[in-house]
Length: 252
Image (cartoon, rainbow, N blue to C red):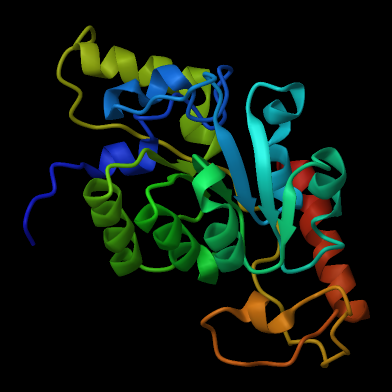
């Protein structure tokens, strides 16, 4: 494969963007100058694909007016309610493709926090339109998909970052600067460990199918995945989720 000149470190650690959601705002004007990007108001017009949960948290600094939020897309408008109410002036969509078609000229960068199997499709569509991308972890499902996005980031000359709090923490940045500066010599080996995960890692069974909520477009949620019945879960599933939450808190 021909070299793109765009390293894995740039994509995964987001050196073109200073942190997960930096104090200057996502992809602040300063961090994008290296790419020749100029914002007329020194603010970015952000869009989000996935408007609840983690994407809503990623947009928290924009609520203070640090950046503009101009469009939101979520296949479930109950799930996206948090951001819809926080940014009432933003255009709302269920299909992110319609959002890009109709609002594309207004959008500078996109925060993506959809189910894992749709990451590559949403991110690639944004990059192809020249939009900078902040993509929640896991970046992709496969190494092949990751290569596609890495090559696209170089081809379309956009700033990209995977959302990973660990890599974005100040302590991690300082450690990297110490290593790269050579202050402690040539580091040949690093040992790291974690006590996690401390919670169940797989369900014993898939809950029975239940009706699709009226607010959810199940077909859009599935994306390119094979059709399967929707399920809202059952008592066993609820207990599985509760175990994950409680053990996660204990491990944290």
